[in-house]
Image (cartoon, rainbow, N blue to C red):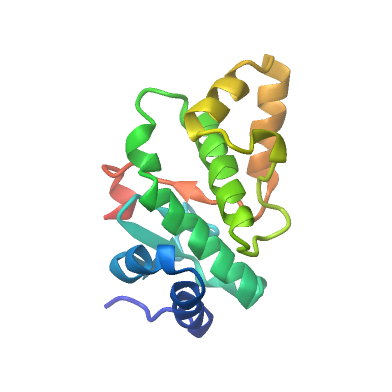
Length: 166
């Protein structure tokens, strides 16, 4: 039996659909699932489901909850899991987070302050951001990956075939 969604998530999901009509259809169709496994310390998506760790949701505000849910929904809408191809998963993860957060910030969605947001990438696709990240030297890349891993608000992106999403 699956665990019920935290009330903050249920309320936030409705608010997300009411405030941001362009996300409403996807938000309504995606399955939101509660998970407490170590692989999902915050929220995650496999392109079909949004996985929610209730312990994480307890630590953030309702507005931040809405923002993180919007972030996961956008990954699904933009097909980020399917577009990775043979790219480095960690670097792709960073690139798609930058791209997603820029779109959402531009649309007025409140995101947690520790999320990846760099306005120098504005107007760039995830693929363009990935190329820019690949042009960094190895030390810069490792610092960026380490910084993302150290951010408590960092999300997880599963491949659609990843068994953790099953």
